[in-house]
Length: 136
Image 1: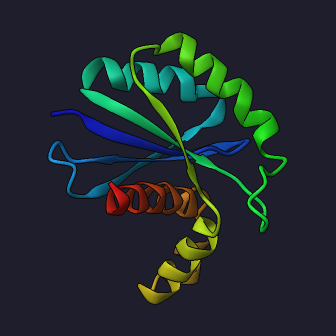
Image 2: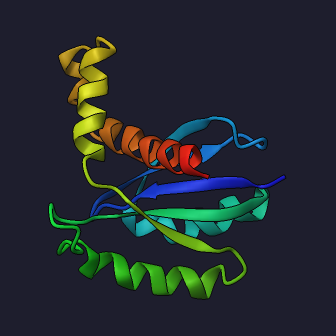
């Protein structure tokens, strides 16, 4: 059984999360630099059975694509060339960053932990994946 890989794509860093093989839980992986992401995905998919890749789709409050899509679209084209056999699906990521910060506060993360770059990205990718799993 293949895993589902979720990505919270950012200009500098990308949060990444993956399911277990039974697709029951979403688990964060270490943040990947945006410039390394394509090679990272290629390598990960060579070692793990990935059946689908989810990419967070940034939208504004009205449901329209946000300006962040200008740098996500070229990545999606490159990804389709590098890994043509794995379906890629966009998932609405509105509020995932807000939810990640709220979850950190609720979980009692110290201010120094919350300030760690990448932690919110990891959590956002996990929220994207968890949300998708709940619907499917």
